[in-house]
Length: 304
Length: 295
Image (cartoon, rainbow over all chains, first blue to last red; front, side, top):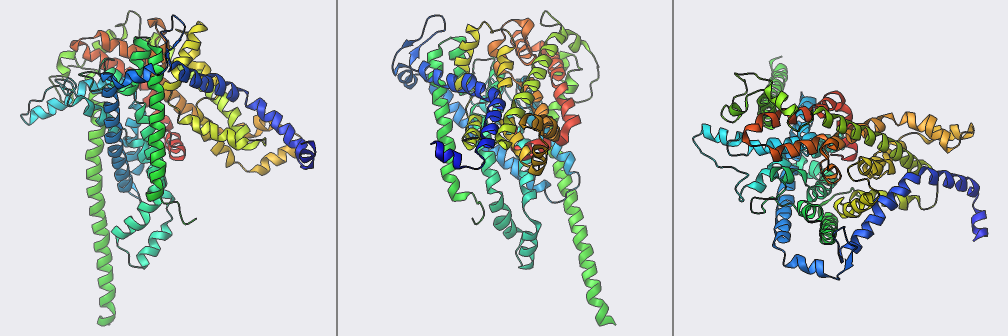
């Protein structure tokens, strides 16, 4: 051991840097242990217990997981969350990509449009906007006022279990600005020469789009897809404010995280809530892994 | 002569036709985009205008120009929760500023070590940091809550602030690592040769050069902390400790339909700091998300 180490010429410098590095990394180490790693394994342990914070946790094997199978609220929250993720993310990214393509390549006023479309992304997760959404889609809200102009009398979009979730989907689509900005940055990375060469070879605009723009943008599409999907699985504020914390009407806005919150912090059923949280984490990991596997078939990373 | 000029003329006129086509196409684009911007921003404008209308008119009078301008909503809303709304604004400001200080301190230290210092398994550290970005908060929050409640820290700001001082917002670590890598290493070497160790190099050389990354971190930490609802909702139980988002949400629960006006007024107040940041720091914001994909 000692001989192999001393053979390295920069061993002593490396050692002194290593020492400094670990001093710099003290907050990181503490954070990793106290805020991330220990809680992660603690919640794994709690997932196999019955625990209400007042008495000590009681090991109960797989009971929490068995309970999920027969828990109608659990299945409702799974359904709501999957619909929310798999409807709103494609729509949001489609809007983001479309607007980025329209704004690309020297349209005047780009900075103005970009800011205007980006603004909702900054505000979208705030309580204030959720309050606004309650009023927009409420009984006498903005949408029904607009429909009233055409003689249509709409009912409350939020009181109806069939439409309540779609108002939250609309809210998420409304925040397409941040993926759009990332798309715009990606479009700018594509070398202009490629288009010029294609023009010389007589390629039409459509062909340039399908053979240059789309393939070179696929890594960015993938990046946005992963990021927004992980974020959407964890959405909470909108559903909590719009439904008053109930996930109603008829569980139609019971986001998975809202159900975890109800079990953990309203019922103080922290063992069950931990089990629910671990299921969420595994589900997010599986969806992300599937995205990565599928990415081999459609994401283009150059010729290397 | 005629045979020579004819083709030039025709190319010229076709070029002119081309620019005319292009111009009319751009005009169409602007028209479409303009309508779309209006649609996107209309809800915000509606809220802003409605805040100045009497509640009973908000839902019956959809137009944007208020016929009956009033500040009642602000006066009522300000005092709706037994204490002035300024209490919650100050609380949110305290938490936001504390979070900013924490993130700047801990993420810069971590990023410098990960980007510049040589030590064993550095890549593993970086990978762990990146992986923790994907970890849902919900899987950690229950043990964290138990931990903080055993320390008697429920209903204080410690549970909101301590994680920020421990470099757990890995996004910002990543942003800073990326930024430090663009700083030429020759500068480090020169400082090294002049005899400054890692601490001096960090403090006098790297940190000042990192300013753009620090600004981006400051802005995003502010906006995220200001908007955050889940964590304050869990830890802050007494109204005098509420941040703006928790206060607003408790106002919703206690209001009937005729309180719409003051809900809008206070929602508007709560958004003003974020809007101000947006107005003054747009360039940094746009650059920040363009390089790292922050929301």
